[in-house]
Length: 314
Ligand code: SAM
Ligand code: SF4
Image (cartoon, rainbow, N blue to C red):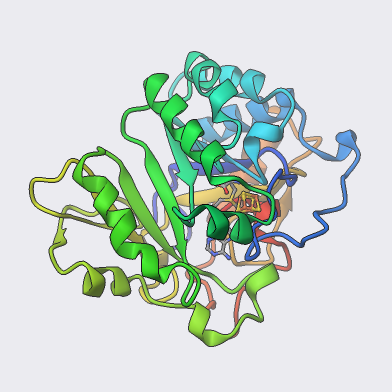
């Protein structure tokens, strides 16, 4: 289905929990978030029903996110239910990787096609500092487990933070010499926890091209501008919501863990989906798609959403 601006919407990001075992400084408060009663969070059946209705509206790809989707009870049932929907071409999941040692193979068996693993530093102390609770070895063990389980073309998300991890750009790109991964450098967006951070933390993803001049442009995919060093196994993606607004290419809608459809990550517009079934549910999704705003206003006044990233799913 196309939205009011002529964009074809084919991608749903479904948040299955707002909880997380990490407390990344840019994403979640140190104390965590209020644990909502179970009944306020989408059930396994509701997740699958919303996925089916979205596919009926033209969605071809679903990404499970959070919070940390792998701390969600029933995550494998959600994956099994979604992956068996006729017409869904791709089921993906974004994770901090810490629980992949146990879950990578079961996720593959449950029908997950692709994984993105978020790792913001390759230095153990820095990794623990950024995540407040994480351990780099767990994330790396998760990546190894994912490869063993057959997730070949992993994507690795790195949020660029000036003065925090921008001195590791070369190290991250160097991984692509031997590994067939895509290292995705994401511009930090001023939302929730990091909205008030000093300006120097927000650096353009172009910094990557300056630090690694050997990178050459490749065919872009979706919202990522892609590059690679000729002859190397992997690639580099730049996700540039701040420096290069890509709203004209945005083909996604989002559903929060408490069942609200968000036509845009940065808009405060939300359509409640809970309690709706069949044609009513599809109708609400179609209305949400039709209302998708033309663009965000991140660089003018900041994000219009009052939610933190862990509630919406990055
Ligand atoms: N817990 C999982 C993870 O960290 O991959 C999935 C949820 S997390 C909200 C999804 C992605 O959003 C992560 O790659 C995270 O680094 C990114 N993210 C969170 N807050 C962000 C922000 N303010 N700006 C840019 N990316 C952000
Ligand atoms: Fe958790 Fe992901 Fe947010 Fe980090 S970025 S606190 S891992 S939801």
